[in-house]
Image 1: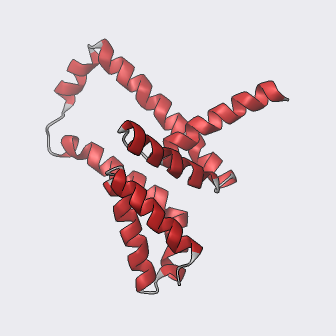
Image 2: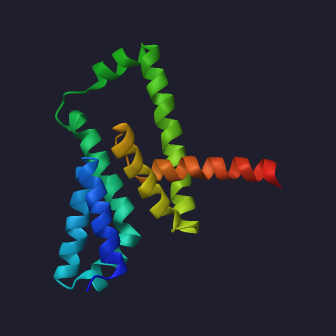
Length: 154
């Protein structure tokens, strides 16, 4: 009747629904649609290999739109650089980019952690009204914590 994968996706969909996480529900709709049209053998490997790059590219496009529309220009850049808030934001951006890079390393080395990251994200959305920002930051934080634990545990 239902495969284990289908049942797992249905449970994740339900948790996404309870947690009001539209992204996870849309992702599961798309995965079911790909399976429904028997495109999974062709698309799943491609999406697994290139999906994060595609997603990061889409997010980058969204972030750059205010620059492309002229809403943010050089004047705004200079004005923001005069604020210590901007320097904190720049530092946070650098930190998050480094964390995400290490998240990619961890997910490549240990892909089954994706499940734990997704479950942690869903739990935070459902229980704490958190926002699902994706597995890369979670994986990056996990990478640093694992390295820290290994440093003291050896």
